[in-house]
Length: 349
Ligand SMILES: [Fe+2]
Ligand SMILES: [Fe+2]
Image (cartoon, rainbow, N blue to C red):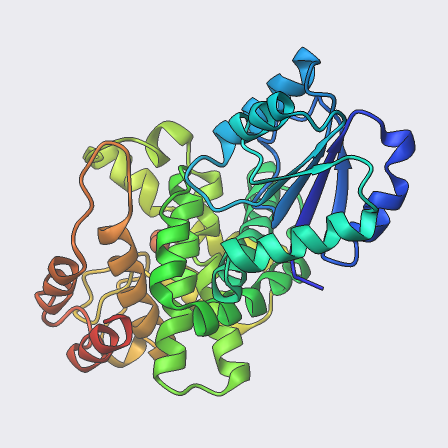
């Protein structure tokens, strides 16, 4: 069985139980109707469409599906109620990658889908898609709780950590970054980039598993305070003015307060959240720490954080190439630990 979700979209849910049961041998199966618009569904492993394609709502549903996942390798099995050449062409034009007659036994449909998943999407890629989806869920929940002022649940964050580490280890950092860069929300994209870079850095440094886990945990939640920054400032394209910068800078201490209020007691995480904008020369914020007062965790995290910010993908600007971003980090003499910057460069190369 695969890690991930299979969607069965059907206009006859009363008759889909056997098919759903067979698909559950391949992955977690969700059954949806033709009113599904796909916007709330992350990255499924595959789709099975059991629809009457002569109905406009079925066509509209599959067009929305095609638009949502355009450019991504997504297996779509189209079950044809009438297996004619015209119906086949129609289904293919609506995004079906394989078509089968609707009377084919459910086990055969499941086997065809499993085969398509293997064929279109290798395991390493699926691990990354799965890792981004799980980490994204954890982060989205955390930010929503922090924004609403409700108690944060770090248990939900824990569930996203192993998928990140596995994805980066098995799927590679480049694939992780490529996947995360496609996400539009700036804070969401940034936190997942920093988490992936932290996973890669800790793997490269040979951290023990428990330490990798702890470091990635801190990285994933490091900007939780941004949930309390007004959106016009948080998502402003281009430079912030001095007043806006002052507001933005409150996010580090705000994040610390949010975690404290939520009962967080891991000192490493609290330190990382409060101090990830501190610089070795004392020029950072919020506490103006310098030298030995800046912990090892913060020294590692600031490098990941700045590199992620420099290489982020935003609609209004061209991305900075990796080599140029490394040049910026190397130019931050006295602020970052040069030896760690050099090691980071090797870790992400
Ligand atoms: Fe930050
Ligand atoms: Fe950050």
